[in-house]
Image 1 (tube, rainbow, N blue to C red):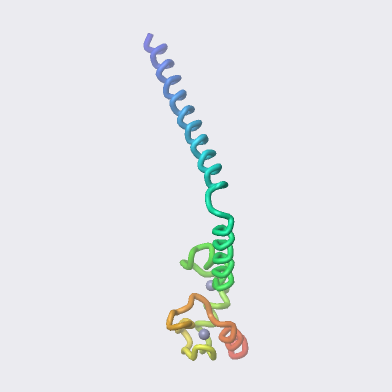
Image 2 (spheres, rainbow, N blue to C red):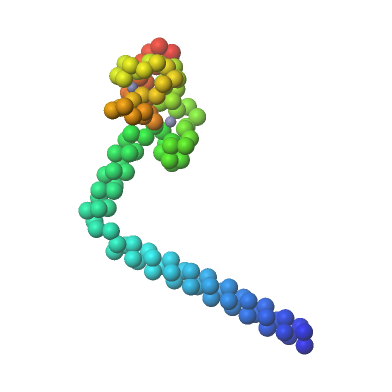
Length: 120
Ligand SMILES: [Zn+2]
Ligand SMILES: [Zn+2]
């Protein structure tokens, strides 16, 4: 008798779990469908443009994917920042480049150039 009860209970638990998984999948599909029709195409285009702009200013791939927390091992920007002065914003080695008073996460092209010339 106990075995039968246990079996019934197990079946009930599995049924519940299965149902939950199904409900989750349905909710996920509904959300996907809503998103597909959600934002206005122009807004999406804007977001893509902003994304591309941010990507162009990003230091290195790793920096980009980690949201600014990490750098590639041989990161040209960071290396240039450490070894060279920046001719563009006249900062000493070790000080990050600036633009409009804001420190940049990447080095100016001229600084990378400078770094390659002074310490190849
Ligand atoms: Zn980097
Ligand atoms: Zn600079």
